[in-house]
Length: 220
Image (cartoon, rainbow, N blue to C red; front, side, top):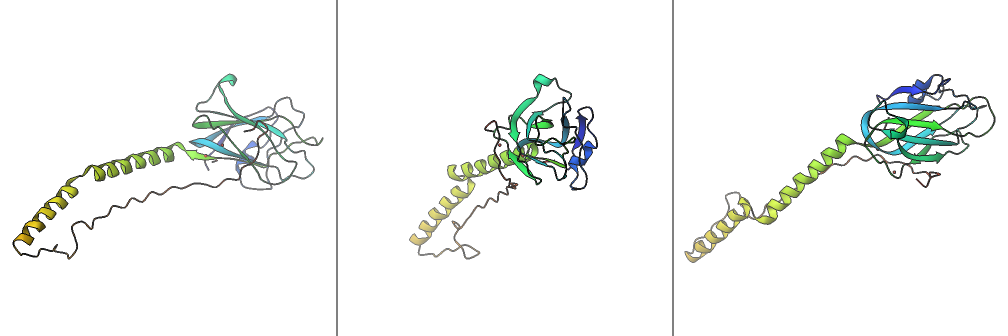
């Protein structure tokens, strides 16, 4: 959600439609156009793991090979785009996911170039584009949570105030036994019945992998 179309190749029509979950709308590309591409700005910086494409239109040609590139800034020179892979779609009118093997960077901008197509129709529509991946902010929160957990574990193992308090209780109990005095904790439990619990919540979005023609791992 929140993605925008920044640029398209000349002749592309209704590009905004690929960001809308509506089977009745689509971006139109002329199949024989010398250059066919779209540049999308994502709502967040993400590590891209899956690209999804679909064309639901009958009596049209299907995109076959396409290239995915990313950048953390825009505008950017062509040789500065980081290529994630060239993928091959099926000649099928359904939603097709493509797994990205190497996300390379935290990406804010995605460029999709449509290279070849099936059939010989005049138009090569694209009904849907999705970009999935993990957000930079979520990754940072996870790493911070991991460091907090390690600090708590290290403190527990090295023996903090609680362990010293336990030792004092043990010494006091031994002295009390020598004096024939029975001591219990005020709440009826041993001072050693302490427990530490760390709840870590991880939200992962399942994806369906598909093959890349380049042998080629993060959403709009």
